Image (cartoon, rainbow, N blue to C red; front, side):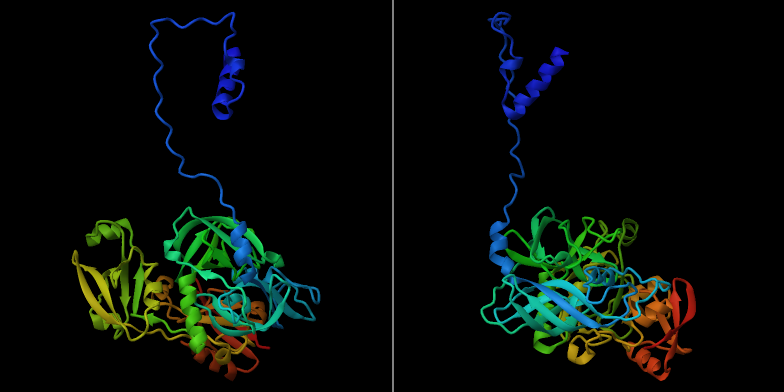
Length: 492
């Protein structure tokens, strides 16, 4: 027993350098070392620590915190499916709408609906008042108010919205406003510290920190954003706020979290700032975003496929379909080709390609490195413009932001070729968001819209026109999984 205690103390000595004499033999019982005793072996030097200390974020927050703003929005009267007292702000509204938690069709609805109120975050990028935030924060706003850290308040105008990337630009009238610095998200590496500033649950200028968990993450229905994954605590109200590196540069916009409980669970996702800045430039210049396409459907590579095609390892983007007459078809791309590079940039997986191609200006030539017949060959494709279903600016789409009549309470987007292949459907429109009449009728995000009152529709414009012709009750033909059925919606 004494030996065990002594060993324990000896361990503490190694850590703290205390109580050495407590375990040493006393002077009366000490045994002198033998004269011929061999010298004790010299232990190898301990390796230098790879991580030393923790960062201090105070200077970063003091310098750039004033450029982070609280974004408060008032939306038109809507049915969220959840009771709310008149005038009561609902900090969870942004979260539930963004993360796809459906309203229950059987849930009692409030009789006297009040305008919905929400809160988000943003950051100032120019001294004259251009602010970046998330599209889902201001998409349905009829009024936007920006609050500064010094309690000044400004009425803001929505300059433009891009739903594909969830980026929006708003503008306040100001001069010499504090701004952030823009960084390079390509330099981020997993394990690096990052900092978020925002307004979770309306608590303005809250600071949270964590590390980069991964880069270039692709989420379901989010093909055009290579997200930065972090473990920074992000909650409803953080949406649209900046993600900083330790140099005080904004590297992303906090946008989404993964949660099974409705709260933060350690998985947060930010839009890389280079993607967002490209959107901002276009929205400010022309109020809309143009994207390139080459007309291919993709599927992921795995070890078995890589071996069958003679690749050294799973890499590249496997072409599953080629749009007839599209840029890739004209360039000579074939089904079964594997794109392993674009303009000298290596392609490791299919999730990288959509974001890279969409960022190329329509009309430009791009060089595709193709793996075919166990050899690499280069083909040149002229990128064309991706046709957007619905507009990107408030002047074109109104305050609702939906591609269909607001009275139905739903918005759709076109299905991508690879999605249609996976779902096995003849439909071309998928439901993204539902509310009001559509939610009450039982329409769900992910439903495929096939037709209206027995007439097939393939575009948002056709859906809108058919719904208007139908009067107050619209019968939507819907595919959900492998089932097809009609759902009647009584429009408002």
